[in-house]
Image 1 (cartoon, rainbow, N blue to C red):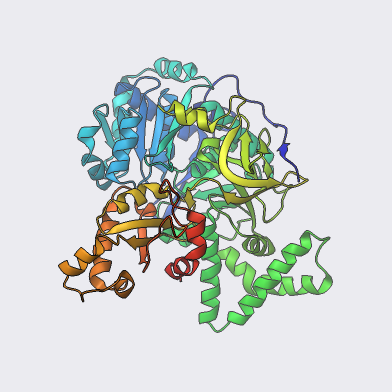
Image 2: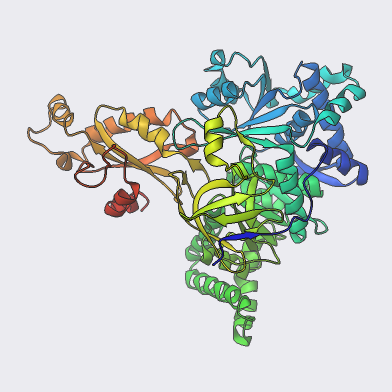
Length: 598
C-alpha cells in the first residue's frame, strides 16, 4: 500500500480568464456545432455554439442592466433544465457569482443560503419555488431582484439588456480572473447550518480541463452526448455541465427522473452520469420485468455471466465458452438493457455514494462501463476517478491528472491539487480546520491507496450520511430538532448508503409516565409495552414532522423506529459528555436499522 500518490496534470492551471471564456472559445472555433439540445414539443431541438453564446450574452446584458455588480451573488433555485445552464454562464459573463439552491430546499435553508451569501438577486424555476422563498424574503434584506423562469424572465432579461453595449459586457468578462470566486455551493455540515464552499474559476477550469483531456474516450469521441438529469445545484452535475460545454459535448437536460427512460431513448446519449441508486434501479426494474414475464432464471443467469465476463477481462480475457454464453445473452438480455438507456451508452460516470463491485462488473459485462469516482463539493467534484485506460472496479480510481491523494497517520484521506476550494464563506475557523497550511484538504473519509495508486474508501471519519442517491445529509440538524421534543430522549438518524433517511428514537423515561397518564394508557406500562402504540407513534411522527421542516425533502426522515430501551452512559451508548457513540448503536441495534429498510 502507498501513503501518497499523484498524477501529473495534462493541462496546467489557467493564468487568465474565467469560465465564460469557454462559451466564447467554443463559438469561435466551431460556431455551427450543436452543443445543446433543448426539448420543445416532444422533440430535441439543436442549439449551435454561436446560438448559445448569443443567448448567454443577451441574458448577461440583462443582469448588468438590472444593476448587478461584479462579484455580487445571485441565487439559482431550479430543477435541471436548460435555463439553469444558460443563467450560470450569463452570471459569470457579467462577472457575478452564482449560489445554487436545491429545488427541494426548505424555507429555512433558502433563508440561510441567500442571506449568508448576501445574494442581491435570485432565479427561481416556478412560482411554487418563489412561494417558498416568499415565506422568508423579509429575512433576506440584500435580495432585491427576483426572476422566475416559467414567467418568461429570460426574454424579459434580454429586453432589459438591449441598452447595454457589447463593449460594456466584454469589459465585464475580461475583468474576471482565475482566482475570482465563481460560485458558493452550500454543503451539509455536521454541526447544523450548511457551509458555503467557495469555488473559483480556476478550481473549475483546472478540474474540467483535466477531466476532459484525461478521459478523451468519454468527452472527445465524435458525436459524444449526455443527458443531464442530476441536480445542477450539486457539484457533480455542475462539473459535468461545465465539462460538456468545454468539450463541445451535445448536452441535454431532463428535470423529471420519472420520465427518464423515455427521455434517454429519444436523446440517445453516448455517456451518462448518475448516482449508484440510478444504476440499481435500472438493474432491479430489468430483473423484475424478467420475473414478471416468467424469465427470472434467464435474467439471473445472464447477470452472472456478465459479472464473470467482466472479471475475466481483468484476468487475461474470457475463455471460449464464456464468450459464447456472453454473445447469446447479449442478444437476449444485455441489448435490451442498453436500449432502455438509449441504445448508444458506452460509458457512465458514477459518484456521490459507493457503487459496489458486483454492480460495476455487471454493467461492464453488458458493455456499459461505469467509471466510479470520488470527491466532494470542496474538491470541485471529482479528485479521483476510474478512467477508461486506468480502471479498477471496486475502487474510486486514481487521482485525476493534476490531483494528489495522501493517507494521514489516522487513516484519513487528504486531497490536494488546484481543484481544492479556497475555503468556507464567512467561516475562517472551519476553513482552517479543513485545509492545512500546505494545501492538503481533510476529506473526513478513511481510505487506502494501493500500489498502482487506486483509491478505496473504507469508512467515514465524519458523521455525514450519504444516501444511495448521493444526497449528503447532516444528522445533527435533524437529531437536534427531534431531541427538542419532550417525549424524545435520544435519536440517531441513519441512511448511509440507503434509499432514504430514517431514525431510531428512544423515549425519555422521566416524561413517559406523564404521557401514559395523559393518554389514559394502562398504569405501569413500559416503553417496550407501548413501542407500537398508535398514539405514541403519532406523537413521535409529529416531532419528526417538525424536525423535517429544517431540511429538504431528500434529507427528511421517512421512517422511524421507537425502541423499547433508552441509550445511556451506563449502557455504553453515550459518552460522559453525552455524545452518541454511533458505531456502538449501529452494532447493537443493527436488526432494528435493517428492519427500517426491509
